Length: 110
Image (cartoon, rainbow, N blue to C red; front, side):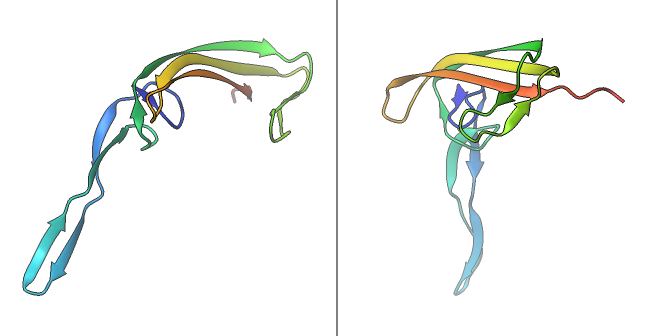
């Protein structure tokens, strides 16, 4: 199973958003609202598979986030790169590909 939010492998779990209530002479009643979700993000879990590779690099240039423009890695700094590829079946039953690249500057150990 794949989490529809983070696109990482997950287990599907049953959650209960039920609540207790009193109504007239009925006391301590419980209304159960169960649903299936991923164990990581509480998002729907989909059929699928993914694989993540982690590598360490030294930046030859500044690396920026492709949509926000935020600086992720400065030139000359060491960084970790996670590359995730795979697939999942969306809500409409259509197979979709996964391709995610995540970069984070390494911090020295103290």
